[in-house]
Amino acid sequence: MFYSAVWKMASDLEQLCSYVNEKIDNIKKILLIRNLGQEPALKTTLSKIGDEIITVNELLNKFELEIQYQEQTNRSLKELCESLEGDFKAVEHLREHIPSCLPQAKAAESLANGADPNPPEPVNAEEPVLAKKPPKEQRVIKEMQFVTTDEFSGVPAYMKSRLTYCQINDVIKEINKAVVSKYKIMHQPKASMTSVKRNHYQRFVNEETKDTKGRYFFVEADLKDFTNLKTDKRLYAILNILRHCQRLSEVRGGGLTRYVLT
Image (cartoon, rainbow, N blue to C red; front, top):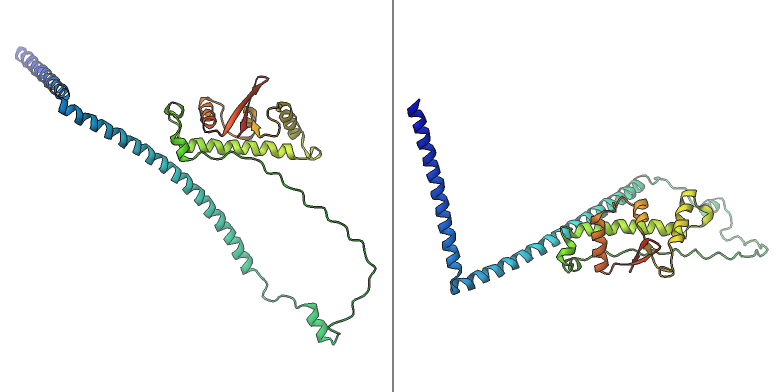
């Protein structure tokens, strides 16, 4: 029992000595590297390496932005292909179901019965021609333009934090959805409105000011009513970026912030 305890203590001491020696070796290496860094010739080399690392990091960031942009483009093209495929199938269905025997023209039947191919036209009393109403001009609702990769690169790092290019444009898509939904109600005849739309319409009118007259804008309530966006710190950070990119401006008053599309 005694010898076993002595052997264990010797083993523990050996491990402790090995640990201490390893730390001493590490300290020596660190001191060696620090001393090498003080030499003028090596300082220049280390400075160049540092500059190259920064350049490589910037290139990697640009590659990441480009990849995000290409992914978004790929998604849009995929949606377009699916839409075109649906149209193609509809056309194929129509082509396959066209009747093989179409009814002959009445003129051919009249000729077969010996009728005059050019009968005199009956003289009818002139009827007043009613003037057709010109088609109602459809109003175009302004939408926010997406942020480009160059604009995103120009946003200060403290604004972007961990936000990505795609996340910002996804929010723009939701904002456009809210603006279109709002102004469709604003342009709709009141007689055809439901009670819910009338309530929305009245709120929209109450939120108008002289600074927003004739301009398209939205408020937080519009995002809550027409989108799934959450009004949290992330959304406010993106709105700040959109203001920096000159996509919107703010008009405050009456305890309400109006985000005006520019």
